[in-house]
Image 1 (cartoon, rainbow, N blue to C red):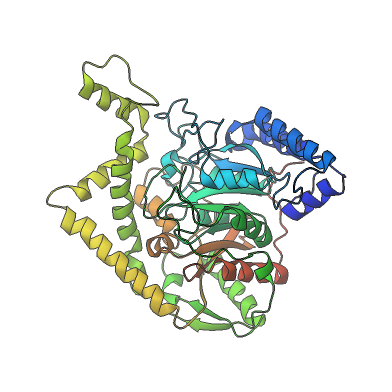
Image 2: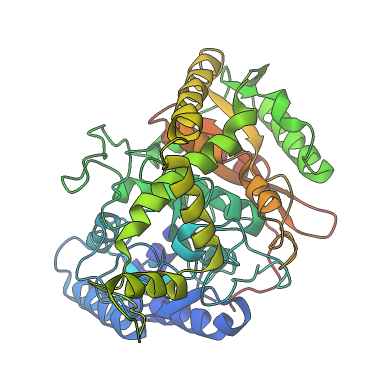
Length: 488
């Protein structure tokens, strides 16, 4: 088995113990052999990955150029709502048909420039709308820890691919918890950066004021290395920020003594699974032993976050998804009587039930007579939530919460009750509303062997601190358990 972790892979390549082609082949073969079980990939690009690996091996043999690129030869998977030239971008939906974008997302372009080998596109909830990865038009992803359970959503394919050791890192997108929640359910690290830290150019829009490209990895070090590559200002994205990008790997070092971690006790109450509560409380105890001071903080408007999020997110989705009309690209319904009928048939046949539900909700809250009562009010609550975080961070350096209220649930368990499904995001969507960074860290196993994650939340642009906290916890209490389904 090829050793996993970015540094292990690079050391093996540079010592000539393995070629880039051998590393890529291992990832490709694992993706292909496990896909019938997990359904984690919608496209596996053997030809493109092999060609890239061959080129990198040639560079290494000739010692041409900078072979010490930070991701030289590292196989990476990309969620199928992020554009990759030469590969499909379906967003887990039939309405995009056989769409192949003619360009790379900025994050993908930067991964290529850093020497990464892109092996394929991962399955996801349709247009990133979901918390279980059961909304994909191409079937659900299954959790490597228990294939009868969900991996979380919407980036479940990327989370499962990393958990199963198919790839050491993968990209996802996070609008209300779609990186952190599946990271918790699959037992991997999942980071949502500050809004504006990573360019959204080439990320298919769901909720434009909420979406961020995020990273899955097996360790804080691996996530830090990838973030250092993809972060930074991009002229193609006006919402990306011209904020300096630190050396995230270098900043993992140092003690936690004197650091203050805030605990919002109101988020540890009703609805939280007892095993999740105990695991997160135990993790807080580890931080106390490492020298951090634990303080209580208040997030008084957190209880309104789900309602606020599902108004704002659906309103933005209603606007963003209006472009899928069957005219310019993607699926077009046949046998329409006229233009309007073609629009209606295309959208009815192309979109799945959850996407239709959110479009209708968003259209409703933006409609005349309801805009002030719902959308404007939600934006006002969002401002209050941001203020809650500002005040909390006057008392602490980072905040600790659970990531998900429960471990992974059974496939089909919540599909008949959308509200219960939406509550899976209760601890994560508040982070997107405030635009601050958040990371999910594996912190234990349930009594039946399912992963449990805790969430660390930081100030704007303070991803380095979150990664440092994660790294310190990993060193103090390594998460070494393996899922049932794992690459050989």
